[in-house]
Length: 491
Image (cartoon, rainbow, N blue to C red; front, side, top):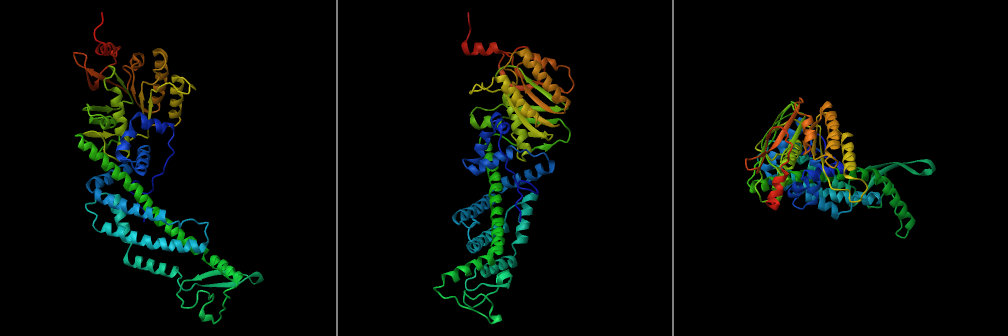
């Protein structure tokens, strides 16, 4: 049996979180979302993190996981029951140090046989859970239920119980062997049959030969023990492998159901705060998005203020500049788009009323940061190094979210650096959303094909509405308005 609740035909591969992944989590506020999903559980936090930093790029895989998310939201009790069962198995593993293979083969065999007895009960409980699973629609969950019922038949469990009884060797152990060089025993074959004779009988009664070791013969008992271990080593390995296989199944079940419980936790929080979600639709054309009422999920989780949603209609534009008034919601929108794209490609719901998008081959962030506290490099040097690491990993259809990139130098130099990079990205079919105050940069792409501009909306009283609308870049960021708002009028 295989779990396969995250992928159709493989398990989650845990990646090392490097600087690029750390930046993605921090820049978009994904860590805030993960904390809400995990509710303090470290395993859930790890699995949610791994899922979000590994967006899916295959349409079938996205839909496959979306369907299971829908099942989880409809029938979370089933996932919680599976999670608790898996937790019980893992706790049993912690209590029984049976998996240490540097022990004697006889010790490994007998301890694993005892663990198999415990696992049979858990397997039967798994089957009982699936007898009445509730409403199940997803391909992944249906397959798991069918595989479980097909495998854990009454004949199978009876056979397993009988095998365990035989492997306990409560009274006798029978094996055959041949005499080899120097009359040494070789070609050991364990004979799995019950025998009413003494444990110290080595050969079957059918042969008619036997001997008894004197109770004071320490060397004889030691030799017998060594022979027994040589006989048991292969079957000990076999039972150990079988036991570990069942345990691994439950460990994966624990991890994968934890993700869906985490998704349910997040969904409940969103609904309790009066916001909305939807399941995305996939566009096959690149680049193309149609989004309505998108909001910043990470910001929503940490504020009691109402978040202003935004729309995005994109068809064919590889480069989008987000410009306009300071503190007008540009970075918030950039974050909201990044979060939604990652959640979409993780097979989850997204924080919007309607969301259709193409699939990106990768998602990266390049946000402005504070000065290097170790004074190893300046801001511009750091920005260039981070961009270099991104460039090494990008490929066509990658999405890059840039927030005030290269603003650490003067506008002329920063604009020139950014212009050259953006041109290269565009030539290689790489998508960019760029928040900038550099008018020189934004103006340089005016009238260029495949370039879009989103501008912060300001009302007739110079008040920010936190809405973005199509427009053209302005030479002002309305900084004076903020100055007067903070300090009042000046004389």
